[in-house]
Length: 334
Image (cartoon, rainbow, N blue to C red; front, side, top):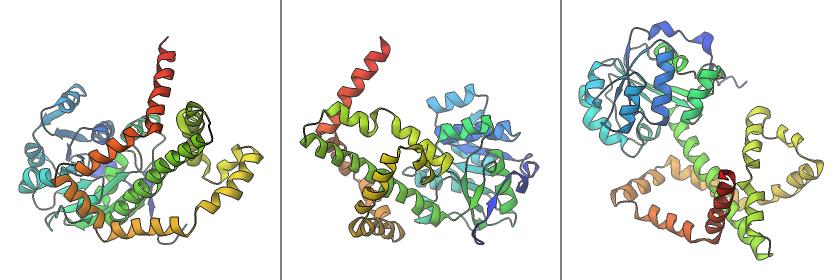
């Protein structure tokens, strides 16, 4: 293990530190609901703050006391801000910040708004990062199963002087220390999260589309192409093997023909141009270029996003995908 790496596990955290505190979860979406349920099961006193909508109705069904964001903030020792990044600054500035008191703790699951200065918490607050590296459903399912999941954690401000033990107690409460919580920072979490979306997940989308175009030009069946590339569900099983065995050791699950082909051919696609593109992505995340562009996009009503989505839907691969999935869905219903 790198000497600079610090992992924290269940034995490093004490649930009793936060057991007599009131924890307000702001936002009851995928992450909010899972984290709230996990903390309640860990014996914490959890209340829910938000707008009166279907999510709050679900929170009431789940047995939580629900109220406005402002009221939840006033009553809480700790405020979990688990709403989407794009609406978080206005909610924080208008409904959370005016009611925060010295030594209260505010918890973020994403470093985005704090790192880019869109949210500037008061200097007297504990400001921490508790970022599960897992989708909301997995946060709940893996807590219930006892498996746990990894997380990135950080103390950005220690207004109370006790932020670390409190953060570790909360991390254990949501199940993040079962597998290991890694000390990070708001900057690191933001760059890694956005880089993975833009340079890994995003590139995969366009790689699939390029593959579809190339294979279609050779006269291969559109449905057969999509089934081979991803629609069969095989990539899901391969990705699962990544997390269980490691990205390189999972190659042993493939035929020798496959192993030889992957190791001898695919590496040539990762040349100077791709590395330069990935480097540019990181630089735009570090200097705030992407955040500024995204902020402008939001301010004018998302025209660029909607245009790109429309262009995707006009492509033959999208239409072929719709046809294939409709056939498979109807077959399953019969």
